Image (cartoon, rainbow, N blue to C red; front, side, top):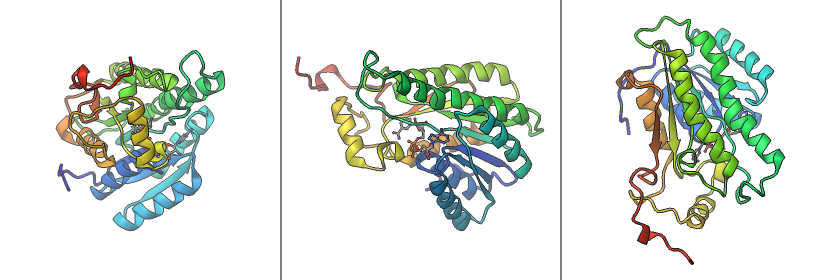
Length: 272
Ligand SMILES: NC(=O)c1ccc[n+]([C@@H]2O[C@H](COP(=O)([O-])OP(=O)(O)OC[C@H]3O[C@@H](n4cnc5c(N)ncnc54)[C@H](O)[C@@H]3O)[C@@H](O)[C@H]2O)c1
């Protein structure tokens, strides 16, 4: 399916968490439309594999950079390398994230788990935008010099006490895009996408594991199917395309209506 026709020829795209799941999907979709890629990930083996696969399928330049987004010195070195390897970074998908642990509420959550989640899912996304935007805003593309797309989550829109620190980080990401959008207007757009439930590495690529999580949370999806990677990639393509050039500071849920449409309360089975 090619839902949006536009060219990214001559444009660079940098994707964190680019080895797997949504990140891999963003990279492939952009390269198919002509972009050269920098894929950033902490998982070197998967990163090499995804790089080779996308290069083979599209014939585009795809450069892997191993980097832990939680470490400032690694992010700074990665940003420097990215802008020397490619002429420009027009699109940044600030997407790397982890989802564990599942279960302990905010009072039982271990401090080390809080710290790890915040350092990757919120501080990591902040560091990447901070150091990429510094160079991105000097680009001369008109009318928009660059586009930053953060991956948030519907867990940042409705707090979820099975993943409390994850929820708080994603609320933070949704707030952060507003602040970044203010600082970077009018040259750079900054928006977030909030996926719902989609089979990716965060569920160990297991539909069964994801469906169990949905059942545990009594999740009902008004559009009555599971989310796919393509559902999220399509919205990222829209944000990467000129069709979205008057949108900044917002968060777009891609969840089949879970958050904004919801379901009547009587649909929700409860033991109480
Ligand atoms: N899958 C879903 O249903 C869902 C729902 C809402 C939000 N999200 C968000 O989507 C984003 C992408 O995750 P995904 O679902 O594609 O899962 P994924 O596990 O397939 O991809 C995440 C990637 O991030 C990388 N990563 C993890 N920690 C890193 C670090 N410190 N530095 C650099 N890279 C790191 C992983 O190695 C992996 O390749 C995450 O921010 C996640 O929170 C996913």
